[in-house]
Length: 411
Image (cartoon, rainbow, N blue to C red; front, side, top):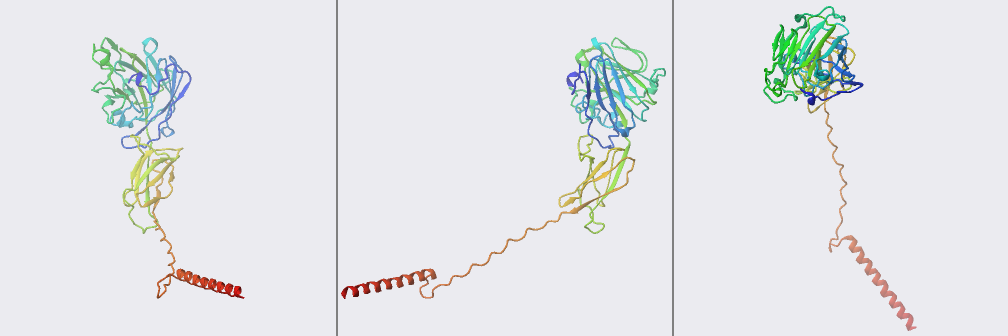
């Protein structure tokens, strides 16, 4: 990965940058570690950074000082050590976990980056150095801050080299294949491509005399798991050609918590099976889902007898929420809070209930219309017959009035 691929470049930045921490993640079989968040300060030639681990890791903050002209803190979305890498098999995928990109010093001179540890480290912790191809990193460490007790090569705990671009899914930062390049861990003085390397150097393995463009590969990394407490680690970093950067990851084993429980249906007879496709989702205390290495919500199925079990990171200071996601026809009662501050918290019980469907009320009956009587002989409607009778009476009255007037004129 080169500078153009960095998600967050702060070259020449003055001040302090706090990199937002990743969402909490469940500890799955292929994810058994926790990673720090990073804050970066300073400017070119005098950068500083601090790595802060979750409280559950019992890992004191690590401070970093470097004279590199370029330091950045990518989010880990496109550049990461996947679960299938050797590092990932020990700590899980670093996908969406921040790390550092560190460059050379002014004028392309070798830069010196110092990691200072405030206290002892948990057993099994490790660090990885990535994108080591057209460059090299000399690794030295001491057991004391005064640097009077250097660690041996064995105590540095070099583990292996590899290429993280072979992981599935492939990181988005990986350029064109093939992804066969791997660095070399130097354990005795050797000359390669005109450079004399000292023991304790992780060097790029690009072929001597190869064009510079072919030396700039993707995914070459090596990793370490020190076997004793470390007070200081120094990384002397140099370039064979070009303007490279190297990547730095820190990781710690995650104390696990196994959460178990039962889902019941109180309204049904005891022993009624829990419906198929009932799922438990693990949420953070604020209701947001805990995510797995693929950035998906952590969910586990519920067995027919209602039992379920999941593993996650211990959290002494922050609760989890357990939510039931029942199939259609059932509703879930509110989520419950779990304090996972031990390897096996107390079992929990959640409940679901059948959805009661109330059928809609039938429409109200309309009163029957009164029947209209008919005239037996004429078949005329009563209203029409009444009108005819009124006309006859009126006609008779008019005739009588005319007769009266004639009699009056004759007298």
